[in-house]
Length: 155
Image 1 (cartoon, rainbow, N blue to C red):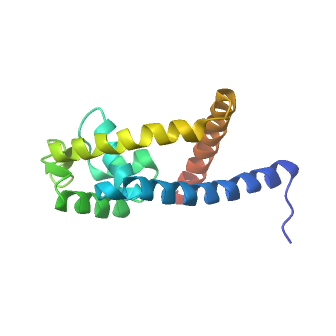
Image 2 (cartoon, rainbow, N blue to C red):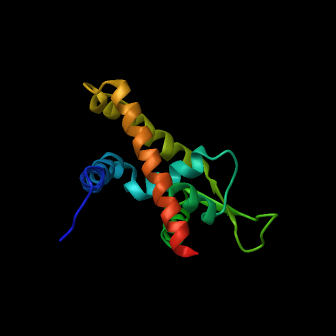
């Protein structure tokens, strides 16, 4: 039998809700970007490359997204096959190439964001901005604690 503190029970409810929302958000995103030949996963990686200050290797992109490096590598290879990203030599690491957006990749990402903006604005209707900010703070705190647990488990 599981015995939770009141806070542990509330956090469990939140985690379960996050799982459900994540699944729905991925489905929503898949449908939004499907006309562009993307999936939510490809769009997410494309966005990480597009929004980075400078070209990064796969491991850095995976770390920033909190994703599995092997999964990110697979998606990056898929994006390269369709001409949305390319690889450049990394002056700091011979084997960890840098991922760079192509012109086609930039256009595809920009098209995705043009489709996204009106949809997310409509989705946001009725949510007080203060509640969204609170949710973001709680999720950021949860992420930091989970990252700490993972690091602790790996050591």
